[in-house]
Image (cartoon, rainbow, N blue to C red; front, side):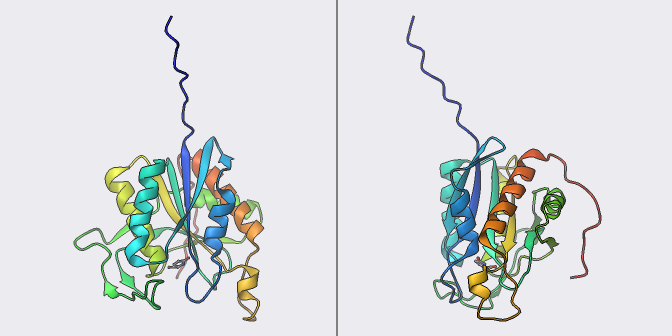
Length: 225
Ligand code: PCA
């Protein structure tokens, strides 16, 4: 009998991206979380943690390379939102750039579309309310957010959702903003922060929930902002 080739069923991948530091910071909690989770297995999925540049021009090509290489079943992109106090589950990516500061390549586009003649917005396809419930049950400060801003994070969120909707519609994806780390907030009294261990635990819960929840919950969690 012919020697049967051992069939290795590849473990499905969940991709978690974070950004490099920007705006004068020397660390970005979003990439620290992605780095910490890299290689873990959650709900049968191998977590791949990856870094994106905080640059309008290079961030989406970098994301494309990771999507091609890992063919993930789920994608959660992370970014730092200094000043926010909890884990911020983003719902809406909007087709707009209005950069308050220059990106890491010195680019500062104002009032331009991410993609001309394309959808104004995309929704996250993550079960954000189930994730919110899981975080709150674990006593981790969290909220839903209706805006990921108009800088590189929203740019990547919009680009991610557009790619998934158009070419990988079985793949779920979305975006989560995280607060400053305590060391980033220590010189600005009153600025909110969250320890890295708490953020990592939060992301484990988010991944577990997203990988095991088919239909999202429905309860009132909206806001007037
Ligand atoms: N936060 C920025 C871009 C990179 C990051 O971590 C943002 O909120 O747009």
